[in-house]
Length: 613
Image 1 (spheres, one colour):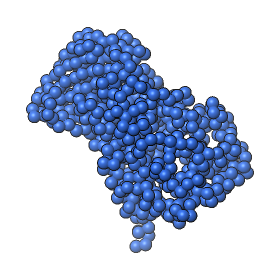
Image 2: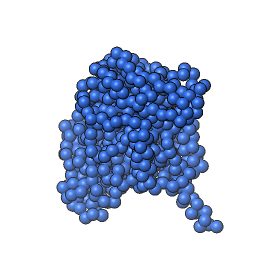
Image 3: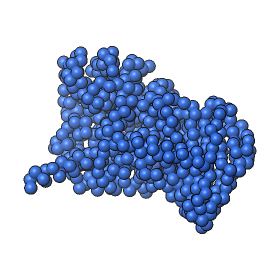
C-alpha cells in the first residue's frame, strides 16, 4: 500500500447516499457513512497512519495495475497483472430504495482470476470519527465485527478467504486460479448485531447484475448524442453518485481536506451542498433529460427558500448539509497529518457565514429553467420566491465575498452583480408567464440599474475587458459565464474583447486560472492550480462565440487531464497532476455544459452550410 497515492489514482463507487474512493491498488482509503457528511470510517487518504483503510490487492510485490468502469455503470474494475496471472477486483455499492434515508450501506468487493493463478491479500483496518477511534474487533468464522461510536462495520467473506484478527484489524489471504472468484462484503449500520444476508459468490454476482441494470436503466434518459457521448455519460453518472437521493441535494465532492496546493493551507471540506453548484447542475441535468433529478433538487431548494431568513438575515445560506441543516461550523482536525502533509485539515466550512449575492441569480435561473414552478409548488412558494427578490432589491449593491469565497474582505464583485441581474430577469419572466403577483416596476428598475452599473464600473477601458471587481483591473474566469446567462450576446464586441483578455492572461495551454491572487489577494497563503471548472467554461465560451476549432481543440486537450476512469478533481497542477477535492461535481457540470455548447454550435454550423449549398 502506497502512503499517499496521487489524488487522481482513484475511482468512485456509491449508492446515492454515500460514496467511497478506491485506489488502483485496490485500497478503499476514503468512506464516510451513513451520509456523505458523516464521520469517516476510512480516511487514510488524509492520514495514512491514523485514517484507516480496506485493502484487497494482489499479494505479489511486482505487478501492474489499472482501473476502468464497466461501461455506463458505477461498477469499478481494478485489474492486477502479475507474473503468475491476471485478476480483477470489482467494487460497487448496491442501490436499494435510495430515496429512503438509511444507516445501512454495503460495499461489495468481488475478486476473480481471469488467467493463471493470483494470490490476494486482504486487510480491513477501520478507524472511526476521522481516525480518532480504533474499533472493538471480533471474528466469528467468516464474519468480522468492528464496533464504533454510532456505526458498526461487519465484514463477511466467502470460503476462499480465511479471516484472522490482528489487533484492531482483520487480515486474510486467498489464492485463486483462472475462473475462480471470492467475495468480501462490508456492511455499515448502527446495529451491533444486525441480521446479515448470507454472502456467496452467486449472491454477489446477482447483486452485480442488478447494480449494472440500475445504472443502464437510469442512463437511458440521457438525451445527449454525439462523439463525446461516453465522457458525458461518465460525468452524468458522477453527478448522480454525488447526489443524496433522499433529499435531491448534490454535494460539491465526497471528500474533505484534499489540497489545492501540496503542503498548503487551501484544504476545504466539500461534503456539503453549495446552492450555486447544485443550482447550476439543474441546467446540465435538464439539458441531458434527467428531469427527476432536477425536480428533486428544486424541491429541496424550495424548502430552503420557504424556511425564511437565515441567522445572518439573508434569505439563503451559501451552503447547507444534504438534509438542509445550515449548521456546519468550520474547525481544524489537528490530529490528522493531511494529504502529504497538507494542513490544516478542516471539518465544516466557513463559507456558510459568507455573503455571496450571486447565488440568488443561480437559484432563480434554476427555477426558471424548468418552465414551471416545480419546487415552489404552491402560491405560498411563489410568495417565498418573490419575497427573496424583494429582499434583493435592497441588497444587490452590497459588497460580498464573491463566487470564489475569498477570505480577503468583501468587494463589489462584477460576477455577483451580473447574477443579481439574472435573478431579476428570470423572476420578471416567471411572474409574467404565470401571472403571479410581483412588484414588477421595482424589479425591472433594479434589473436595468444593475446592467447600467456593470457596463459602467465593471468594464476596464485600459484592459478592454470586464474585470473581477470595481476597484481593480484583475481578470476573473467567472465572467466566462456572461454569455451563458444571456447578460451579453456571445458576439458582443465587449464580450469578445473580454474573452481575448482572459485568453491572454488566465489561459495556459487550455487550462484556465480563476484569477491572479498575487495582484488580487484572497486572504490565503500559497498558490493554486488551474480550475477545471473554468477550463470547461472556456470551452463553452469559445463554442458560443463561434470559435469552434479552438473550442474543440481545448475540449479534447481537457479530456487528456482526466484520470484513467474519466474523473476530475477541482484543479490541475503545474505538471498536470490533479489537485483538490475529488471528484468535483462542479467540474463535471461544466464538462456537460461544454459538450452541449459544442454540439449545439456544430449543429448550427452544419445547418448553415447546408442552407448555403
